[in-house]
Image 1: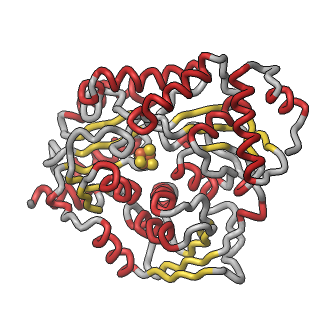
Image 2 (image 1 turned 30 degrees about the vertical axis):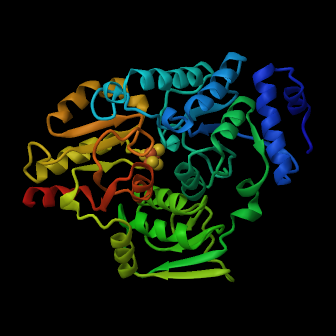
Image 3 (image 1 turned 90 degrees about the vertical axis):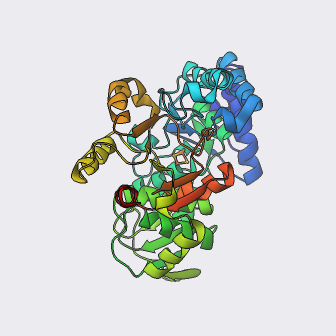
Length: 397
Ligand code: F3S
């Protein structure tokens, strides 16, 4: 692999042991994939940092890099963690002291290395990616959004590789960093009307399942940004989708491919059939509603409160859990307290997929990514619906 002088110096240990280890990892993986060179990145985002997922082994890897002087060379953020950063559901007192301490060690090590206190899977809301810029992100939903909605370039990086990219400011020039791999090669036509959440998520779920290893061109009216986020997250979860081109949405939309290697026509009935197959629970049987997968911005809390007001509800009849970025935890403290009295529970910095699920085995959600993971990871039964429908049904059930 061809390296610049600066990259050679990193590999030789001129910038310290952590940078050397990180560069060695990137070069090894890049060489194994056949990359000819590295590329400079402007933002690294590390996933896989819930202690529940990575355990002692992952914790020691991150700590070791921090202790060896690792320092982020570019803007760097990290994904949701294994507990809510405020008291309440999935909060410190629920996960237990031992788990809390381990998770905080991971967070401290990352922040010691210069990562922003982010704890979110929507890093594009913290720093908006630019068309054509190179990133190294490790959260599959965010990767698909960066490529699809912003036209930035990132592969689906594993947690250790995204961390190594943060410490070197480089990743291997391969996959979706190359122009020729970003052209759509499959065509999806949706015959129904505009899709928000959760409909766009169901469409994404089918696309991920049916069209692996493609860049699908999606001929459908997908609402920005939430419909796009939801579609990308679901397709990345049910398959390995890392990029779509959506008609009228993606900056790299130059029209459908002339000779797609695969074609798929999806009808509203197909969406309904899949929804029933993968989420057979009736929404009224669910114990709680979860939303915010991918994370919501805090403005969603206003929307939820307005919805309760509109439905004439002082309190939601059943708990509503809302996942938002961890960086808001301090500023949200009082508001979260007030919302709790309305049975709305804010979960800053986590989600029910990456956290330990302490309770709530029958869950309604508007997220198809959550539908994919909750039964597999937590043995939960799931229902798909919007919050509006859930609240209405809970009132009458
Ligand atoms: Fe984010 Fe958790 Fe969903 S990390 S995309 S809210 S599974």
